[in-house]
Length: 497
Image 1: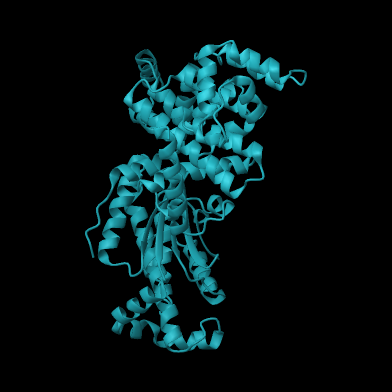
Image 2: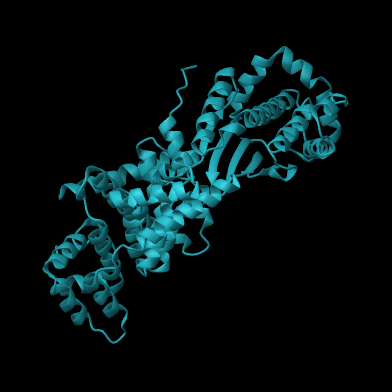
């Protein structure tokens, strides 16, 4: 098989942005096991948990080997025409399963691959926990489930490896000792058996280890984020000319002509808003060259949202540095994709179209703030870290991306953005955590994920399944086709054609 190269930058980015890292294999060769260990080491190092590596790599290997055995068992039973869900036939098959498969393992591994039976490993730093999962696409049956949980129940009674080695292990399954040691490994790093679970769902068996992130680190990150937000509070209020128009828009007594007149009083705003209105976002049949017509065609909600984007760029700065130019270009692309996802898959909701476009434009506000940070503020934050005893690395993690969504959302709250836009900013990496405004959040999340997918920084398996389902996207080929269409449209808009 080709040499597997660990992409440290991709792993670090995933660790900071709650993106799941996945490794999929059909036969679990030694090369994959070594690669798995290297990825886990980089992943844990990036989130300050490298000391857990030796314990967790044992757990992952044990679960991966068990998943491979479960897949082997399926093809073995199929070849012998035995029903694995029948109690008597199960007992019959297990009599010779271990010996016959060991004697001819390459044959059965080939059958597994031909049947598409995979083993998938997943690492994810999500909120205050680390998730490690091993999945295989055959569901454990009732008998297997009982056997596994019997082993786990027995593991709770042991306090040392010596105790375990003196016990008789079920010879027909072979996984009993390994699972018991796994629980002991978790105990050694301060976790109880509640941190491990195994279940069947959606055609897969899922074994998950949930590890709370170091409590001191969470507290320090929270302190640091709070201090950064306090410093962000020194940012100016939203521009008064924009705020006054926003107030007019929300005033039921206002007339369209009043709003248009107020916008037209600011020549720079007029020019910028007309440029936005004439972009491909609004798909207008003809070019609009005056604000009254723009307000009429785009609607109050559309104008309101454009003003949020306009005001944010005025405060945080436009494309005045290479880093900021790259961030805004990513934001424009995300907005375009979010808008077109919604226009194509949910065309009945015009208000949603306006919200997802601006949500896409502003989703990375937190990163843009970091790109604008004044040297005096950097010195203040570093002095704060020293005073509070917070490791310098934590600020580096924040500025590299960790918690930027939360910081961006707090700025949006300061500027009285609508709840839907705040949610889009706060949850654009973790849509499952959003309780409200799911349609806007999912659209912005998926649009952002699509920009990562098209440059190879995110795989289809790493994208939130519920967000994909929300837009009826079921496979990578379909997603790529959509991206190709959107990319072509975005390039046309960007070139001014």
